[in-house]
Each structure stands twice: as structure tokens, then as C-alpha cells.
Image (cartoon, rainbow, N blue to C red):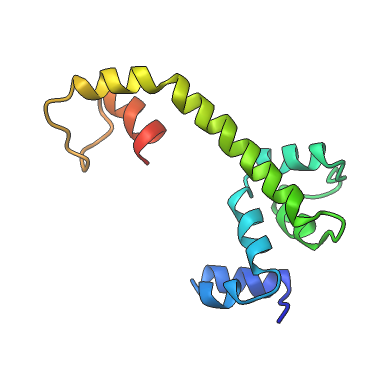
Length: 127
């Protein structure tokens, strides 16, 4: 089975992941979906010389999905490089995180983001 972008997107929006996973291009869809933020897509397109100049950013994802010359290996390599970049940032911040966590006597995960400790730890490391 080989669904169109629109069909796969409809499955995604209705949480029909088994149908996506069983499609020939379903995994490609999910991988591209994981990097579908505007800046990330623009970086991917620049790296692979994909012209998106005349596209609205909401059309980046379907456009790249349908490009036959973009191979899954290119997508995999890009995702892996982004993961390594983010992992490096977390490693660099690890000592700070451990220090901040050691200062906690009690942490209520359901509270507001009122203090600077919550603003640093929750969005950068926990969520």
C-alpha cells in the first residue's frame, strides 16, 4: 500500500498509527513529521539544495515528502545529526542540571512555572 501525503496526514491526525506503519512510505512520513518545524525543514532543505523559496512554510513537509530524489538515508542522517547536536547541549548542561536537582527538597510537577528553577529544568530536561 502506498498512501498519499494527505491520506497519511489524515491517519496521523486520527491516531491511526498502525495504518501509517503498514504503508510503504509511512515511516518516511513519521520521520519527516518529527522534523516538521519551520527552521528544521529550512535547514534540511538548505543542506540538500531543495528550493522552497516559493512555498509557504506549511507546505515544506508535503513538498519534501513527495521528492523522490530525497532518500530515506538522507532523512535518517539529518535526524541523527540533530539528535547528536541536542545531546551535546544536554551533556554540556548536565553538571548544571545535577546541581539544580540536588537543591530540590520537593518538586511538585503540577505547579506553575513561577520560579527560575522550574523554568530551567522542566522545559529543557524533563518535558
